[in-house]
Length: 462
Image 1 (cartoon, rainbow, N blue to C red):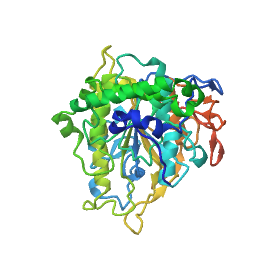
Image 2: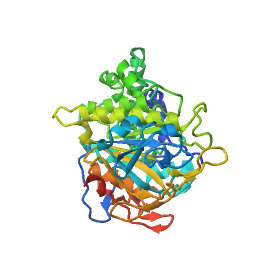
Image 3: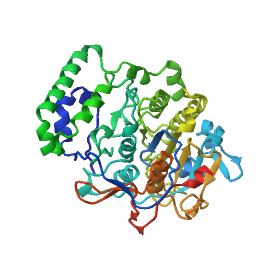
Image 4: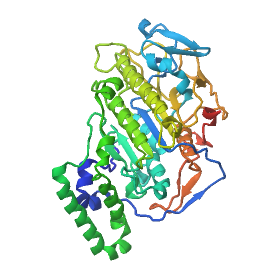
């Protein structure tokens, strides 16, 4: 499956006058959207920013946060009991093993689809992939961005939704949401990736002025053909953000940061450097509400324990260990202007699209896809660390204890509902005014197995 979605790169921002109309003309320009709730819930609130880390390719639960003492697991994983009911591979996740009090592990994650692309779509959109609604459905990042649009300040110089290292074919974009909610797509190992060079400022101004004149000239057409012209103002505002000189410092990394967060190994997505910039974005408090970071590839069908293989479990664990541990440390040690710890206003969810087969390795010495058991890590914004939700069988292949109040597996929709809730958003909302005429529900209660009432994983916070 090849998902084509629009993304906002530096070139696209600078050349926004030329491509803003053509590249996004299929997006409906609905303002204001008609939003209503389908039931009464009380969002938790407390978070001002969400960082969603996608472990692309599907992290092996039995080689990370649900490690098992089975014969095929190498001895140098150094599996130890951290506390009762919690064993960790200290040899490959040493820093995170020391920081268990900073996060909670969910060992009862399940997925709906064994296909990577469709499962990643589900994780971003909270529903099954549909060709008919591909151009219409927005990602959770765009919905969060939309919910906070009326709270943007004059000092906000960054777009509300930023993504790192997500392949264009896999990134779910803004759908029918306003253009300003479209993700700004960056690469974690190219820093700074889009700050406007001094010698391009005049060109930028000319194109921005051209956009303004086109908007004035086509004012009547904006009313008559809203699907083509209505969002020009949104794109103009987004482009103008990048001309602010203060943006450059947010995307800079010190040599100490580069050393602490890890070297680039050539994997899909530099999790370390993306995490540094994510930390800077949270600290800057400059308008970004949703940060999507992609880290791959965890799709280790072969030679997963071979240290000489180009991708292996040791590399993947090491990158996650150093990046996530330092991100948690820095967000915990730094405060905002009001003296509030950054970790207390940042919700972090780290999850793959599904899990992997457990027990003996396959014929290629790797692990295959498994929708019946997976892991996720949650931290920040009130999450009570040091705990484990759920349990699997002796080899980690199936869930035997969901470990939370709904007494069923945790699905991607539950993760999204939790993100909405902690961001203060009613996850039962729906938008009735859509191009297809079919209501867009923030969290659908439809699944491949029939109706399921998804909701907040409240057990994380108590």
